Structures are given as C-alpha cells and as structure tokens.
Length: 200
Ligand SMILES: [Fe+2]
Image (cartoon, rainbow, N blue to C red):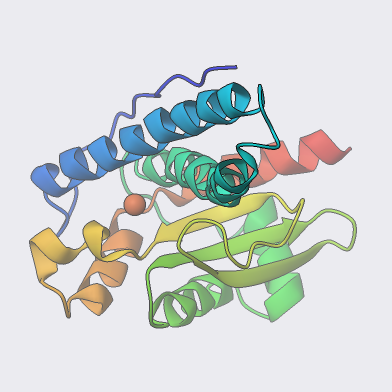
C-alpha cells in the first residue's frame, strides 16, 4: 500500500519559528515518500530474490527507519495543534502519572532529561496498557530502542533539524524548553484517553 502525507494545523509557536516548522514538515514528507519508495523497490527486487538478496537485505534494514520517521512525526506535530495548554491535574493522564511517578509533572521532567541525551533521536513516553505503567526511551534515529507494541503518549523530536535553525547546534536545551512551552497537554490527555479506550 501507499501512504499519504498528512497535514498539520501547527499554530504560531513560542521560540520555534514558522520557517523551522515548515522545513520540518518537508522532512516528514520525505519519510512518507521514502517509505513508499522502499516498499516498491523491495517488491520489485523480490522478482529475483536470489540475485537481489543483498539489496533486499539492506532495504529491509532501512524500511522501519522510514516508517518510524513517518509515524513519529505524525505524533509530534499534532501535539502543538490547538495551542499550548497546561496539564489538567484532574485528568486521567495526570492521575496515572502521579500514581506511577508520584507527581503530575514527573513525566515532563523525565522527558526533558531523556531529551538531553546525546545523538539524534526522540525522547518518548510510552504507556503499557497491560501493567498500567509508563516507560520512557531515548529512541536513536527513528527506530532504535522502541518499546515494541506500546502506544506512545508523548513524542519529543530531538534531532538537530528540530532546533538548529532557531537555536544553533548547541541549542537543544532551549528547544526542549520551547517544546513544553508550546505543548498542548489537553491533546496529549485526549491521546491517552484514546489509548485507554482502545484497550478496554
Ligand atoms: Fe523531525
């Protein structure tokens, strides 16, 4: 199947420029395009799998990089849609985080700490519906270090392309602060509610 690019209604952001967002969305579109291209290339090469074994092998290894790049950005941009809003301390999300980590702002603190790890990737908050536990990972690039099967609650892109234009190569900390200034926690709470409904 062929995947289509999605559009995002990202409002004007604090400390993240429209130019940066526009360029970032173009990069996202590249993941969709490349996932489709690799999918088609593998199918073509499979017409002679023995002759093309090496090429197929290399494309298979890169396939989830493109897919995860596509899907993570489709989680990233909607977190800004609707504009910034604080976490509702009475929300199911806040209650679950408090139960798990002792305070409603614990997830934000941990996401920031994870975001400052070195290397291109993502700081990601997952929820395990089976155990009702939160987990966090630094996902290298787009695809290394995911918690398989766990739904994603917050996806914070910390590739340099997310902050280089506005804050320079050493500006990750400023960008991470900006991400949370602009984060629409009510959208995240809705996502968490959808995760809960999907498992009930
Ligand atoms: Fe990105």
